[in-house]
Image 1 (cartoon, rainbow, N blue to C red):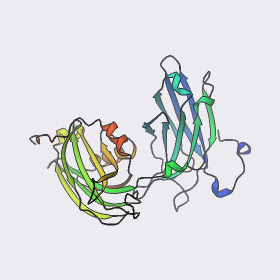
Image 2 (cartoon, one colour):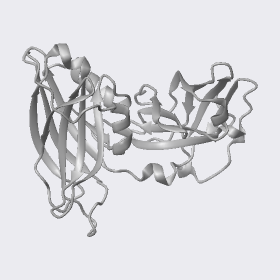
Image 3 (tube, one colour):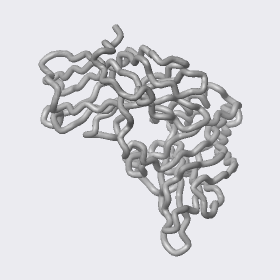
Image 4 (cartoon, helix red, strand yellow):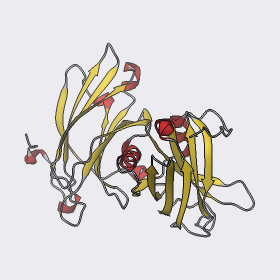
Length: 305
């Protein structure tokens, strides 16, 4: 069922971002919130061909680290997702939390554009029955757009030789870290095994830029028997001569990753011997570190291949 267009407030045509149909159900016994992402309609076209490649990110403001993501639907402005996600949230916290659903346009070789979002304060919701309704998408709130920057790199894995090759290609729109409004960025590439730091390498430093171009390749030996237990952490740093270097942001890939990071890792494993390049948005350092749960600063002995 399409939304009733008469219920939608009139606005300037270019501000229309589309609508999202969702469902909500709270189980008071198990203290679980079940969120259904049903479908979207009349999404704003983000690609030059007049379509988009939409997917939806769902999270609660009470726990920003736990984010779910639907599949990407190619070349459509009316995707049917029929996806559902479960959040564990105590009844006492429900009224304090807001449900956020953001519709993005997937791009392999550039930043994913946000089409629009809906924010629903859960304190306003009557959970005595299951809710299913349409909601108009609005422009993303400002702090969602205060990005740390993006990084593009390619991954290639050859199981027969145990060679994992990463090429750090470039970064852009990095957060300004220096007083003169620029940064001196470099990238650290680190492998962790079973949540412990294992191997690391880093790029050269690029002076006075927020859009550095690296094109630097690093090869790691990772036996196929260990590939499931490896996390691949890429962090962007600002070099300082006088003080400690600052971390701008980081991303991690591997079988424990989610969303775009997991998709990139899976694409690499599904295409052995072929480099797979993709852009990623940098995440706050604390968020990634908490998710990774790193235990140790020590380097492990390299296992026999």
